[in-house]
Amino acid sequence: MNSFSALSSTQRSVLQTVTQFRQLTTSQLRRIHYRSGTPDGQRVRSCRHLKRLTQLGYLKRMWGAYSGSAEYVYQLASTKARTPEPHTLDIAETFVRLIEAGARNMTFRTEPWCHTRVGHVLLKPDFYLEIGGACYFGEQDSGVEWEAQLTAKMRRYIQAIDSGAWPEDRAFPLVLWLVPDEARRKYLEDIIHKLGEQALFSTVLFSEAAERLVGNGRQGTGAA
Image 1 (cartoon, one colour):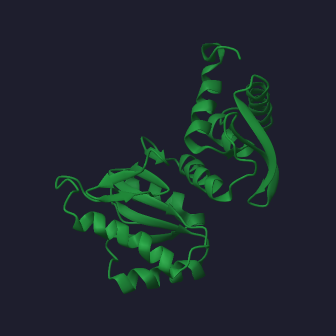
Image 2 (cartoon, rainbow, N blue to C red):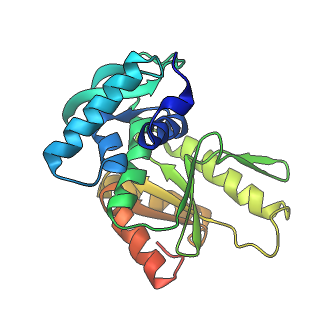
């Protein structure tokens, strides 16, 4: 394998992004790293770089469908996954949409780097986001977990706050659930209401999340 230092800065950035998110589609990588020039130029440059990184053994690709479109999905060559993971790609899509919505100076950490222990409680959000002075634990909801599972997950956040181990000089992040549709949103909000934790948890449609978060960041508010 050729030396990492021989790669261009864009190619190295692509590898860092794939390392962070584990899986991304061709179009997601293009929307992150190849935003200048004409659409045809973006496609040519991204395809050439991704093909080269695959040939050099840094990446491997598989054919799959995401969000109604069939395209290559890339992951590190050392990764053992054999099929595209929609949940993983949804998390990457949230990041891409934040960039496209104009997010600046944001911190976006994925698993396992976003995991944090608060006292005796280990929190495992899907991502951690800082933007515009606000911070969030992000839960990318796929609509497959039932009330008992969701309640157990929410209770871990409540236990983390109740532990008293969170630094007093830092606001606890809002736990933001990105949901696929209005029916699922109501389902989660009913659970949140039962727990009486409307100040800790919030929901937003996946399709609206990026614009809402960037807009809130520009206004300097932490509410979603």
